[in-house]
Structure formats: structure tokens, C-alpha cells
Length: 85
Image (tube, rainbow, N blue to C red; front, side, top):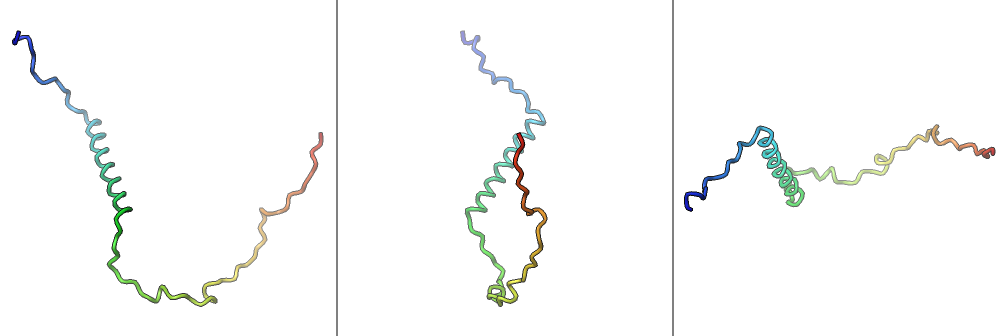
């Protein structure tokens, strides 16, 4: 009865090239997603100093630029006509 039992490991075929590409591609995608999520959650400290001059408000004359009012061709009023039945 002991001779009838077969305890040998099952025969598993070697993974094909496409299965390997899929497996490692999924691992790479998962690691990339984890890095992206951690980049959003964890704050990044900026090591370079910024000039305080860039944060000063500018004169209103330099900020506001006069806009030239050009007529828009696509905004013509449509001619209303009654439908003939």
C-alpha cells in the first residue's frame, strides 16, 4: 500500500518568456505606483533659497496690461427665421 502513494513533486512547466515579462512588468508597475503615492503623501523639502524680491507685489501698472478689444467673428448674432411647414 505504501508503494502505491506517489509523493513526487508535481510537474510544473518552466515559465515562458512572455510570462516572465508579465510578472516583472507587474512588479515594476506596483513599485512605480508605490513611489508615486509616497511622493504625494510625503512632503518634499526644498533645499534652495528663493529670493524675497520675487514675492513682493508689483505695481498695478506693470501687472495690468490693456487688452485690445477685437471683434470676434464667431459671436455674430444669428438671424432668426421661422420654420416653414
